[in-house]
Image (cartoon, rainbow, N blue to C red; front, top):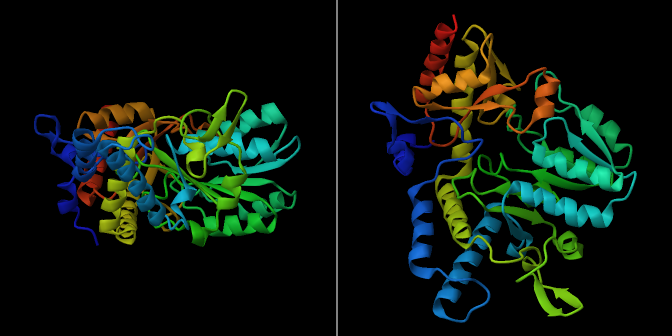
Length: 407
């Protein structure tokens, strides 16, 4: 198990008081995680010692920067067990990774009438790109329903598969319900039906051991900032044969092998999809974040979060008027989205904030899922490797305070 008190010392932000005598209780890691000193120092060292552009220069700083950038790619590939670092494409975030697949692979392979299967629990990042393609190309969208207890209806999924989809794109873990979907089974069934698969792993890679070879997925997308790394950088993993066949996503420097006035030839993978000067310092920070998580062990992180989540669900369900959405802790990651009878979720969040408790309120970029449950918004507490049961108790005390204020 993790020594959370020692882990918290690695994060400078937890030394902060939100006001005199009130320490920060950060329960919003599903939106973005906090950063350990190891990551901050790695990025600082890059800017202080090795700042230069990559892949273009032969001087010492350029070679150092290039080495740091590519070493991080190797670490990330190892972290998800990718067969090759060349299958790890740097993007800005999970959203851009999904859009890369939609704009490159999908526009080269999908035509009017082709079916793309999504789920009702998707983040907007895995809805809007396909809706754009539907309007542009006339593809069809099918949706795996979410059951009342927050799980995917796999029987209905099998019915959708009988229609011969070309792509199945789904979230590994819901950012609202916390549901951890059976990704390997969903992928296996999709492949049996002849479909390509894309996994939105923004919420799973930071919290679970994710092995792309064991899953068998064709594409997988995730972001650094949700896994103790910096904002502004993410990854698209893809199978080599698919990536090699795909046209480039953006045009410009570094994604080319040769340019003439009227033609160009693309660079090799992964550079074919990395046009222009990339987020070099962020890649260095990403690599440091992977080092940090690896040193703790993903199994230990998952076990700690399960314990905290199980405790949080028990405590929240004790509060009269609180309704928690999603499955039981057995099928759930570190997310507790809830409503409090008679109080708007934004009011809940604002009052909790007065006591230094940071939770999220809103539709969490999943409006269709909220509409399915008849909700305009929820409050959401989310947990990570640095959270404690004591913080859960303070959250519960804060909700009771909200109840008192609203009578």
